[in-house]
Amino acid sequence: MIIISVKNLKKQTGIIEKLGGKIPDPVIIFMMLYVIVITLTAIFGGRGFSMTSPNGSSVTYEIKNMLTFENIRWIFSNAILNNWLGYAGGIVGTILIVMFGIGIAEESGLLSALIRRMGTNVSDRLLPFVMVLLGIMSNIATDAGYLILIPLAGLLYVGIGKNPIIGMAAAFAGVSAGFSANLIPATVVDVIIGTNAQAFAQNQNIPFVSYLGKEINPMTMHYYFMLASTVMLVLIGGFVTLKFVRPRLQKQKYIIPKDINIRDFEVTKKEKRALLWSGAGLVISLLTAAFLGFGPLREYVDEAGKTVTPFLDNIIIIITMIFFVPGVFYGFASGKFRNSADVVSAMSKQIGSMGYAIVLTFFCYNFLSLLTYSNIGTYITYIGAEGLQAIGASNMSIVLIMGFIVITGIINLFVGGLSSKWMLLGPIFIPMLYHVNSSMTPDVVAAAYRIADSSTNIITPLMTYAGVVLMYMRKYKPDFTMGNLISLMMPYSIVFMVSWTMLLIGFILFKIPLGF
Image (cartoon, rainbow, N blue to C red; front, side, top):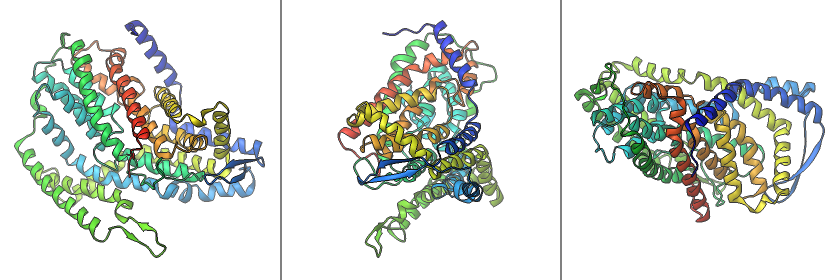
């Protein structure tokens, strides 16, 4: 058994914070990488190399010097429309569309009411499991789990006479460690991971198919795995809370601040009535989706004999509608929306919160396009694949998966942000690991990334909401430190990563599709 002293933990936490503080913002990193790649193309421009394509033939590449007049013109001519807005078929627009529906559901108060309604109607024994489940499900609304569920969990535990930090730890585990799991397909995370994975693969002529060799939709390629992950994380998260966290905290003293009112999170009669109206909106949206799926958007075979799936191809708009309609119904029934202008304002507010993402994607997608066009990205893949093959990794797919998870987990301790890390690691590892072992398809690599990123979110002080969670917990225990928080969440992180990795390996060994 490994015992970590409080003194050593604080020291290790301080080291992580110190090193992480020296790492520039991801936007700056992509700017620097852009300059570095252009410099490398000037040095290695004209160098040729050969790689084996997926069909077995040899393909020759040549690194392009991006400082020639022709290539400088390419940089400026393609920066906005092709390299940014048009990257991978318009990922930026897809993400914004998803936020329309989620924005309405969140700004109307629907998601908050659902969380409070579910959280206040469960028994003490089941409460840890429900907190983890609600945490996982709250991820469809970005920061709703951090800002609503975690403080609510504290209030719920205060109300039943238990240490509030127990409930907050379970909720934090669900919100942050379970960030990649969900029962609902095509969430924002699914879009970011899936559509970019497709682009990373296609940019280097890697077939975008599952490890079973079947065509997949980028937004639903992990759906079956995420369903199983949700069930597993809820059970394991609840178990860790009951067996490790609760015994440690249940006898510790805590305070109840005077400004804390348990009634603050109760669902009012008006909100309960509005929830019924949102249920009616959900029925309408589901019936509409069913009509489209079996009607104008049903599957068909085109003139070339190819099967076309309009419903799955437009799943983002369908999911957006399913969130949008109940949100509008709830907003008007609760009085949050009084006219159509309020609805438009709610959508605009959510899109406004995407400002940083828009800045990030501009520099990131231009950098990725430069990698592809110059062939530097392919050259990095070539070098990495040659190195892994030289050490005999070609026949060790399970070892490759585990190695990638460990590397990503370590990086996650120092670099925050799911999307920014994926933009850095995905374009390199997706083609590289496929060239080393063809069973390491984009869906497998992306699933491994999601496991590592989610499992270590709760033990890094650099996670965006780590300070917010610490602030909530300090209301009940003022001397609670970041070291205490990391120590408290460590069992969740370790158990989640180990069990989640085993689940992915189990899917692969038994040839269970990760999604569709």
